[in-house]
Image 1: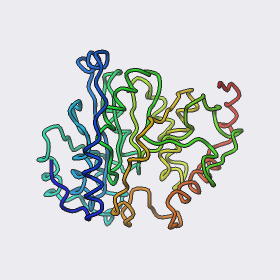
Image 2: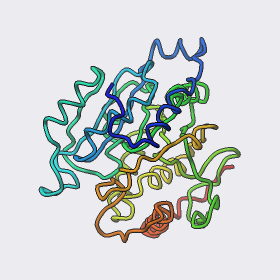
Image 3: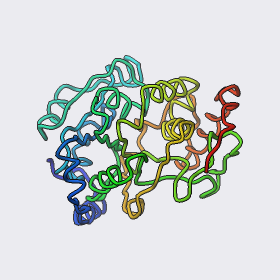
Length: 302
């Protein structure tokens, strides 16, 4: 992998600390599973950030990963002037690791580009697909922790960070407009910035179609992938759980706040507080979901 020469001094120190975190021990049960099923890393990025992506990958324990899928739209933000991925940057990233596969996607579906094409591409229902963001420094134990949880809790989605409604100001949502009540110890919304582990068998083609349908409702929904994914998971009774000890070790790199951020887009006013802006988008997206869809939520389970 490439080194961290483009990081600032403070970020470089944090990166070294993240690398010193011991990975989760692979138990015999998990080892037996990995001998039969593959683990994939899935992500996307912008034209300007592509060459920085190896920095993020370099912080991950990739010893159990079979392939790294980088999904790049043919036209970033579906605009001819929205930015072009330079072939030299693509070649550079591909040269970093033989497991890296660059996949060009016909349509830019926003932040969902980091995970949906890979879920559609992978066929083994027991494979594990881990989505990551392109601007986060992850602790070295992220991948092994997600693998362990995915194997030992086979019917759950796991994440490095998640939200329970009401965790902080702005995150209160009317549960009458949410598909189900949360299970004890689980989260309402999975947060992609913390990494998310998907068992291929859990996310069905029907669920993917529903996520994509919500993605097309509005700009707010398109830029709220964590929300639309979580909504559909809840609608299908899929539990999501935050892995302890990851959230506090996530580092947002400074370039994640640049204008080309995937969660920034035309039609949504900007805010200095990213978390608050996300909540604004989530509330608006929920308002855009047709009421006839909401009426199906009568069979709730705890």
